[in-house]
Image (tube, rainbow, N blue to C red; front, side, top):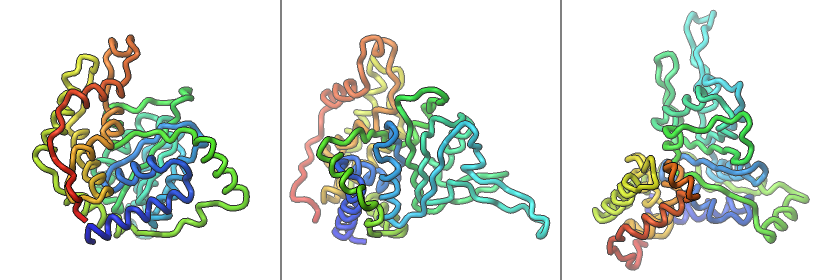
Length: 321
């Protein structure tokens, strides 16, 4: 797939999802960029703002096989990974796939299940495969986890550990729609379901091709050093107990490549890095007790770091296409 065709496909996908998710263009773009960068997405939001609609809209526009799991305390790891069962007729043990055997897994309210079930997602999200009874099974490609959690209700929730949060490329919030968008939503839902009008723009094979195009976006050594300095600055900041891991820095690099493609370039510039900077970094940070006492947020710290780390001088030029 050529870069020109890639950018056209990306914009068509965005336009299709916007039919069902009104007034959240930036959220749609960032989620698609994370998907193109082979990342997983954590949506922290209250119920009823369209998280499931968003996931369904992406699955329809991309023709992806889609599974949804409502995480509760009684969901077992085998519900996610699958299990083996003895077949009396053949005399063999057979693998029964779990919910993860799909292209797009919506993990609804992931923080309401047990830590044991949450940990079943670690190998799945990092390596795109599941190991059951010593046998490894590859997941379909592409494979994306779109997880949600409710920031308000804390009863019966299990806070995601740092190792789990680190496997999500971005953490974002949709929030309530503005008045104009909400009125448009009400009008559109009065006599039809917008999801029924979403066309298939791509398929799993096309998405894998787009991901390969993103991988081949050029990154100058100055950009690599810029991302490295941003990550290292978080590890040295006095208000942070835990800074950005190398995995987090790699995630920012991949997200920057996807951003460059969307903006019509075959190379990354500093503005591409900044576009997803907070979405990639903020949820990976652990604030010090001093920061909490003084009501200092992760966003404030990241803004400070972004202002203190010198941007490399790389011009956007005329773009690649």
